Length: 338
Image (cartoon, rainbow, N blue to C red; front, top):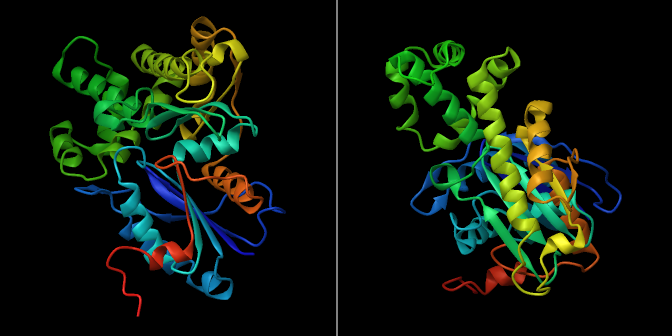
């Protein structure tokens, strides 16, 4: 049975068509779209789905997927589940759908079947504590204006602010980051127009995170401090999930069970610059936690969810996880049943 795995992320989307999810190993997939745009109804799925169906038109026609498994950013509060489901049903009317928050997909790929805590650090940050059955608790994932502390957009914004302080001659500025800003964006005076006018502001900000990493690797103390602060934010997010009771199910704090805590996401590619202070801080905040940095990608999480669906181990728990059959599309309000 052909299965389409789709990751809809903050800085772009990826997809992979898999013949048999029970036989497949780790999947990388292909880039299928640009950074997501956010409008009045949340994340606009029209463009990424259009790009997906266009670029994969030949393989999709040769092996129409019976199952489409999607891990999606912004599903917990930004984009109504119903809107996302409708867009996916219209794109894949004959397929079963598994629609999961990117936090759920990350947890499925990074943790064992009994769950634990997973923190995804990419453009944004979201943490999830779950056993995939009876209890679910999230932390952060509030977007780059309200939260996502320690994520790529947060790091990039902190770096740009330090660069602009150097440009103005204010305390706390970084000449190294100012040089990176000029190299990437040109005259600092033009930066507001390059940021505030964009619907994908989070991705624009996150695009400066690699520059902050370069400056830190070269010994810039301001850049180094930004990464340390990012690590402390990520540790705090994980600790808030590992030391407080989940909602539903068990009433005991997870810390009494020495929960596995997994950190995943593209931001971790900077390595020791982030993971070193992160481990140090988490050891202070949640000393009983068992920390790992599994090398799994977003599509690996979708693959894990697809496998669980195939063997009947998934149940709908909107907005975290929704299972939709082709018949559900025919029962939509206003749907022409003729």
